[in-house]
Structures are given as structure tokens and as C-alpha cells.
Image (tube, rainbow, N blue to C red; front, top):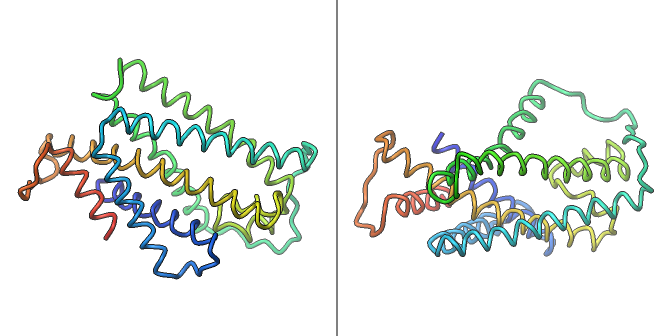
Amino acid sequence: MAFSMVINQSLVARTFGTYTLQLFDISQNSMWVPILGVGLLIFAFIVNISDNRFIQSFTSVISLLKIIELLVFAGVGLIIANFSLQPAESSGQSPETTVTSFIAAIALTILSFKAFTTLTNQGGEEIEKPKKNVGRAILFSILISLFVYVLIAWAVSSNLSIDEIIEKKDFALAAAEPVLGNLGGVVFTVIIAIIATISGIIASVFAVSCMLAMLTDMKLIPHRHFGMPGNIQRHTLVYTIVIAMV
């Protein structure tokens, strides 16, 4: 469980590199992808060793920007499609659903819910009245996510065929390209992706380090200080960042 949470940081960081390179027309196989990912992890470390109030304010502002941009994207797509309820059509060339693709879809769904560890693992010390507010935070998060992504799914399926959606499967918001035009779509997609990955990494790294510190205090994970100053949570933050970078 501990390593899966750490590996998740590296996956998100790599996504950041992949999206960013779209602005410069560089191959996804370029070494710049992991270099940018490592750079983001270093930035997340610097932010996470700052004051907790700064972390809260920083991630809150970025998350708000992310939600607003997603709503703008969905709104523009729906306006262009005249709010049509016509479902996406297929030319019949779509690949058949396999057991592997079904399992992959489930895995992605589970991965998306790992974000709630950010709420639950901060609940003990960082949130006022955690027994009451952690549940509220999770509920509001689900409702906001549901509302935003239903609108996005509606906008995408109204403007693209199933075949076009599958063609752009590697980039979740690539549908902005035909909706907003080539340049505008790419730039808009990259900006949202960069904001999303930055906010996700900063919040998630903090949550993971808190979780590992808690498991260390429970004697479930071995720990060595290696001469580092600070508390165990600061140490697990270093371990998380270093392993994710590797």
C-alpha cells in the first residue's frame, strides 16, 4: 500500500511532463518527460516543507482555478453543441471491449478515489472537528466532481464521435482541440493539466507522507533517521519524493 501511494506520485508527475511537452511539439518518449516530472516533485517538496497554512492556501487557490477552467471548457463545448443530448456515434470501427480493458478501467476508477486519502490522512491534526468535517469534505468533493465531470462528458460526447474520443484517449481533455480550435485547444488542455497535476502532487505528497508517518508510529513500517533533522513526517516526505523521483 505504501509503495502504491508513492508510485502514484510518479505517475502524476510523468503526466505533467507529457502534457507540458505538447506546447513544444516534442515527442512523448523524450527524456524531458521524466525531467519535468522530477522537477515537479522537487517543487512539491519545497512547498510541503513550508508552513501548513501556505500549503492549504496554495492548493485551495489552484484547485479553484482548476474547477473554473473545467467548467469553462464544458460550458463552451455545450454551447457549440447547442446543448444537444445526442449521444456520440461510432462508425463501427471501435475496438472490442476486452477483459484487460475492463480491468484497466476499474483500476483507473480506484486510482481516482485515492485522492480521498488526502482528506482522511489530514483529518486527525489538520482539520477542525475531523469526525464531522472529514465526512462533509468527502461528500462535497464527490458532488463537485460528479457535477463537473458529467458536464465534461456531455460536452465531449456532443462534439466528438466515439472513434474520435478513442483516438484522443491518451489525453483526457484533448476534446478541447476540435471544440476550441487547434492552438486554443492544446493550450487550454495543457494549462488545465498543469494546474491539475501541480495541485494533485502537492496535496497528495503531503497526505502520503502523513500516512507513512502514522504507519511508522504504529511500528508497521521500519524507519531510519539517517541523520536528518525534523520529525518523522518530514522524513517520510523525503522518502516519498526520492522514491517517486527514482
